[in-house]
Length: 280
Image (cartoon, rainbow, N blue to C red):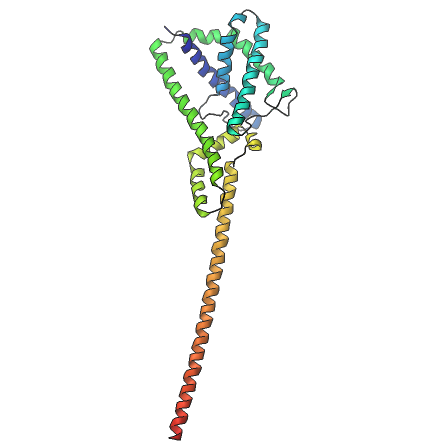
């Protein structure tokens, strides 16, 4: 028998994927290029899955009241979005989205336009979409559903751990990159070529607002510092070459002068010797 926990977990993953798909398509159409939306590496936005599960759990007693479901969906999703934005900013020292330019927003974390959309989506999900998904989830063989959920959960947890580590590693990298030394430059270059930086670059493209709030170096800034470091090294090498060439010239000049002095001394000695011979 399929338990309620398995049903809710299935809904969480279904709507997390649906949320990622909706945001990716919407942002890609607006930007006119493919934008892989979402904080995690995989194709899912957990905030949507969490919102739907909360709505499904908390609005059972309003299952016959469309207006109450609409209003409660706005409240639940609004609180969830606000808290998610707040805690992600506290954890990562970055604002992942900002609605400050929209009317009727609260600290740029939530806005009326999105809240109304959440209300419509929440009501549609409770009365139309959830019954459809629950019907077909219940038809999946119990063992098959167990295996699928365990597999997806393992991937999801691994994805979450890796994604969080990527951001924290980049914060550490910015602390390391304080001196433009060749050693640090090479170290950071290796990281930039690594998969961690590619993942972070995807996050920056997915959440452009993060560049305005982030308190540690983005990969572009790190690359800029590396380029500056390279230029400094080139200048130092050129200066060293010049100094070396000047030292060689000085050495040649000194050597030449010594040879001339030696020749003069030899000539003097030869002349003295000739004079003595004449006297004899």
